[in-house]
Image (tube, rainbow, N blue to C red; front, top):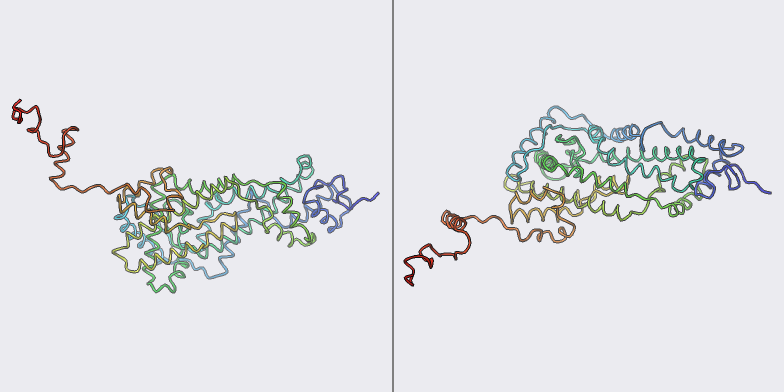
Length: 457
């Protein structure tokens, strides 16, 4: 009778028998040369993998992610903004708010201002990134257990726990690298359309602002002012639409809740990726974990969440584009060039799309920014700024994907209030007071009940 090696298919203590992990951990047992199987085998594997990780709470080790993000940022010069930079940003935001007062009923949402370094951006925005990424990471880290039969989970538990920690460690590295790269490109606290900073804190990342200004043929002061206008407009919208922050972040967490890992499909994908792996090479194990092994096809619930997020981001960015366009139309000759540069940068799928797509499969690119801006501008032309801003009163009032398909038809029957002369106003007031039943131009003396009626009655 032939008995296979430790952790092999004939090992009665092998908790991974019949699963995609059988090949991996069977080979690992041989690679590490440990006699026997079962608990002894698991202990050997644990000691090897634990060297890759540090203890942490939650799905991701955010200390590791934050440190790696800062190290990524430090690969390029990242000077601390000077006091002059801070004053320049504060002055630009003050002027921006003054200009925006004439374009929207929403009052200023800025309660504090700052000039950030790239490292500052990492620190200041991490709390919101943690909310956005953690739910998806939890589902991904827990995905390994779905391929192990229920009756084997008690034995496999220690190994699955370690594997989950390994997946979390790999994700933390991905998050850290992605956020570090993103910090090198973002221009402001609200640059990607999400409220990443503290409420009311308007900030510009000055190193990136200067890099963005290069080659535009526009003075740096104009670039700072234009980006301050966009930042101040974002802050107004988030301050005066209290449900919007949760609406955007909720779309991301709804995506995470809808993540479903089909065990049979996951097994097939894992078996394909496990073939040929070198179990004695821990770097090859890291490559496996970073290869998308636990990715799953999007469910209908996830597709709905992604659609809601995409539309909401387009509407936010379109509204900002519209009100800033109005604020600069008569004041800033360079605004048209800057507006187009920002539009191209956002529509091309910049840092936000690449980061979220790599981390959790989400894309934050506002693909329909121009459609949304056209929709808001058309509504303002027909009905005024108050009607445009009033759409934000409730999420059920927001335009849909179908509305963005034909943006000039959104509330096409809405018209601006008619301006009346004093005479017309008096006539309308008399008609209102007299009530229905009188034709236009009819006077009291024309009434049939009048003594001076032509019939003499």
